[in-house]
Length: 242
Ligand code: DC
Image 1: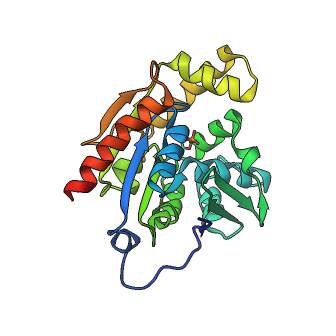
Image 2: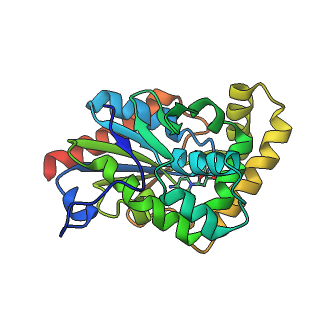
């Protein structure tokens, strides 16, 4: 799968993107920073042969690229204008949601926890969220199934999702995960993540919430396979009844 998505992609006339994707099976995995969303989503997509998107990559990418391009991140309208431009695009790969600025791959740069904080800041801007919404929904266009992870995937981006999961984990377990990935001190990471989660949960526009009708899973004491097995069973039971 190598779909490319930008906020500037033209729409087919008449139908909203939500209407165009109604035949795609969508599963959403929301939750706080480093709760295991990416590993779980990637593995689920692999098992079902579906597409996976990390919607956080849109916010991380736009925050990093706007900053890199000299846009003032305190200026909502300027960031939204950048988000609506075709300077960037997202590519869906099986192993990563990739971000390109002017055709150059910047995926590695955007994955740092420091960029997570910038992403969290601009994700509180309603105009930026609106600019990215249809591009995120287009990930489900023309595919059999999509696993979408983020903060508002079940509540706003894909309200029609057949299965909605809310992953949590103890703050220390989450910080330890990210610290290992980045070779950093867990104590520093825990503080940054707490700030980011607090910001994401308290913003007015599409805050991180446990979506209605979702299943909450605490991944702290579970292996990746235990979490994925549980969600796989749930998806299979829903698909076979629909
Ligand atoms: O999942 P992540 O850590 O890559 O997300 C980075 C930031 O992007 C997160 O702190 C808040 C924002 N985000 C969001 O507001 N809505 C989403 N659906 C996904 C991410």
